[in-house]
Length: 531
Image 1 (cartoon, rainbow, N blue to C red):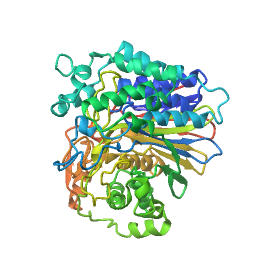
Image 2 (spheres, one colour; image 1 turned 135 degrees about the vertical axis):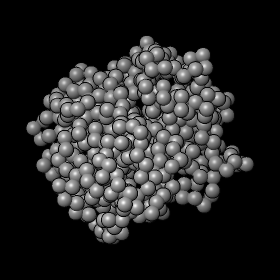
Image 3 (tube, rainbow, N blue to C red; image 1 turned 180 degrees about the vertical axis):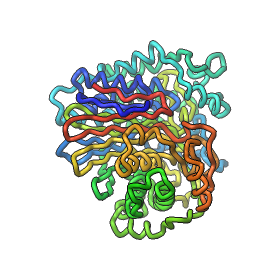
């Protein structure tokens, strides 16, 4: 995709075109942006199964004209039986298998909470069976395996193939399905149909909850039906940072939204001229701001009930000024810090009336724990492996506690009336890609699509990488690469011009005259679908 797309009647962007179309069609049928996002979320869980699942977590930002943005935390907590004693004799929680499936899946409750919010102002709520229709159909009739699904299944097969249920659903006679093959998920189709008929709460307090809990127990997971019953997504107050011409919003802990906002706040204080886009000052400034933000994130972010400090204090004028003074405009700060991988999808929707949604849904690693429940077809997340078994750690495992989340959808309200919904998947890369897209568009005058298509970088690791150096796509000017090395950055130039390592980003902007711009990432299988 080379050009930014435009529409007037609404638009949905997603990293798979069928999910974007599912949301767009809900808008066409008279639904609002929240309803469109639920339809897209159900569809993306089917058509992009290596990236997300209804057995994962989610986060929402919702903005209506004239109202403050609303945030929803749909992340699950550790099961009652998920104690350090459960993992006795282990140095860490296993990354795959039943032991990795230790937290409640929150995303379906988040759909329910978002629809509850929409019902407070929607004139004619759309039936649930309509919203889940495309997801049900794609699971039943099949979807075409994408290149990224084939590649990631092949790369991660050793860790996945022994997980209960994985081979039955995602392999063909023990082999990785090739791109172009058809994947059918009848059990998942039946589960989505049950939710459409009985309501989303059935996942937590109905027949589905009983079946999910029984199978997880049978497989050796600590999650029980009682954990599902005790869970509900909740409205939370978003974090925000004030910039010169806009206010940017993100999610509070347990997400790393704090880091995303800090990067933008710090970068603005560096005073980079608008002529320096894609030059050393731009990239070095954002990379060094990232280091400061990640250090603060690692100090503060954990379960929201156990925060060592108020994250909003890190976003005050004085705190940002002090952190900005620690950035050397010419020399790189030594790195690394601890890094966090992850696999996720971000999607955005804006409707005709200007309601904007920024949404993210994840299983943490690709295919999560790898555990696929045979009775319901649900792939369960492994988000809880970010817990530490060290009782003194900031993110120490305790029953009922929420793990650290890389997930963080973003939304910006400009003083001139523009609304921007944007985000990406990609673990540690999420705050960095958000900063790249925002600054390219809002500070250096690039079109929305150009801001997403342009070459990207990643400080740290993602997608299971162990290296924590600075990775660059190979489209950057060699002179810029050398300047970064000369400044002390440990640079690795990737072989790819468009690398999955850099995440799958997307963005929407609504202008005061009602025009909506949309851009999807050429690194993904996505699209921006408008009316």
